[in-house]
Length: 363
Image (cartoon, rainbow, N blue to C red; front, side, top):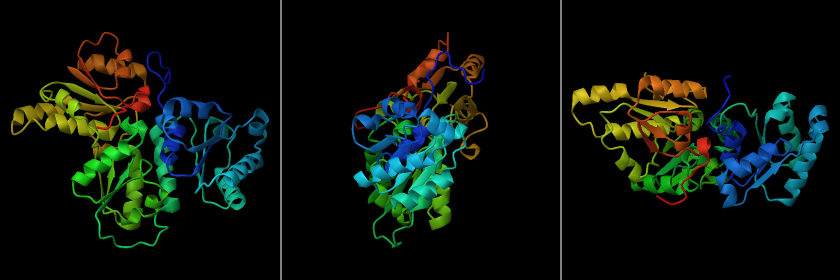
């Protein structure tokens, strides 16, 4: 059975990823469910819920609301919330319920904007995809709706944009501060970490960025959109590796290693391992074959290598590890539960979307 998990916990779904993008932007986010999906997001998939406020609501769909498609009741609730809160926009997030009954999100958007008098974004999540797909769709909605709304002006300061930094991808609730500090050390005066420290006003000024840095695959599509619209160059980067993790990676270039994380984080770990190789061509050749990046999530071929792999099933992951006989596996320690009698080394680098474990301290 493809989706059966016997040892691993279910990974964060697409609606959680979409909510994570909007969480800090000052809008009213409505999860179109009966309450269960919202409970999972607030209780398990959004660690900022325990640290800072966000206007996050469940639509509270009852059985007959879902069966009869009573969209007018949802709009009435949203209008009431908008009258009580100073929301800058509204975001309607799909779940399995509207997916099953084929909710017309385009119609919902038109109705809500007319009744509430504010910009409304919709993300048609289904609950059957991974969190990064929801993030990807949310970033696209966000930049299509707001980027460029402010008058474009040439800036005298160097500004960097950061796309794809959420707790689900970086496993840190203060990722925006960490990334901003490290990019400023590289000479940037301002850093817009969209949705993680930078708000809606920075999103509107996205066209002013000198360069965008994408820290997870979920941000690549949005970066390409901003490049088309504003000519902003971009590159992938993951400035989130702790010093103690880097120390643990030393000496692994000659070993057979599997790195399991989101693709851009895994690539950065691989680059760190290979940075020790130097000019030893034999060692370099072995490293290119033996250091493999794997992921359960989005994989862009142009940012991978031929030996990289995508996992879809728990038993596929276990069988692959057994067959390849890795010396070391790098990833979230939750994955060890699926590996049975694997006796090689394991380096724990958390992935919040996999285990719900995150880093609390500032690097």
